[in-house]
Length: 304
Image (cartoon, rainbow, N blue to C red; front, side, top):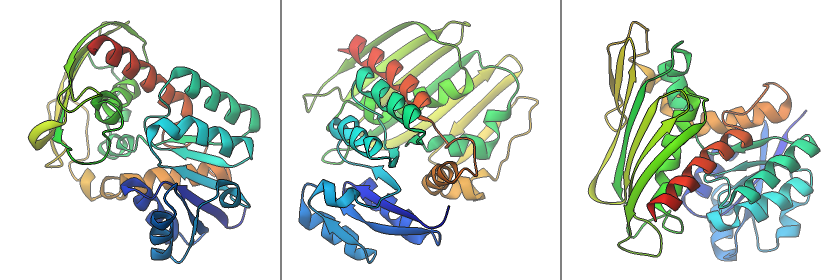
């Protein structure tokens, strides 16, 4: 497979990140950007010598791959369009806003032999640390993800689907057992979506996951404590440091690796490698993103 023609839907913050990744790759032709605000599409595209599109049909002509970084409510519809046209799709999180929409995307990709990747790029950080290679399952995971986003991006969905869903994906990467029980509580300050949620999930094997997510704090805090029978790993994602008392070797310099420095670039490259047949799968598959979405929607429903 030669040069891949790539496009980005959504001229916001994450659309800009993806456009930059595609434009920098030598084996990718960055074709352009589609956005419902044509001037935004044109501004972002021009930054990378590409074209801004105001008509979705013209945008998709000749594309091989697309990143969907538009508002979450549009993810399923846009992915359906891409996959129906034979275009491989990288969808930013959340994969969809409903299980039905997510399942349809996964089914369409499977039926069409297409790659469906999801934007849970924090998996790259876990891989760089070596956490995905620890041979024993955790008995407890405690995640804290608190920030102040207003008036920022991501407020078209709850903090569960915007922030906490990353921790659900990471927990499921460490423990593939299904959730068995959960309880959650939350509050809304800016409305209409939940701005702060605390959840506890009991997995079928007995592992307990607690997640505390908020976009109402003054500062930012992003930590995770992973407890094993043999010890624990306490991570400060903001400081890019961890303390490890398990017998398993982890990489203390993970932040200096290619994956640690640029998890999004790692995720995009993995997506393209899967499209080219050079890798069996992207960093996070559509099926895995669907599992994280399932858990997030259950927590969101309980927290309401």
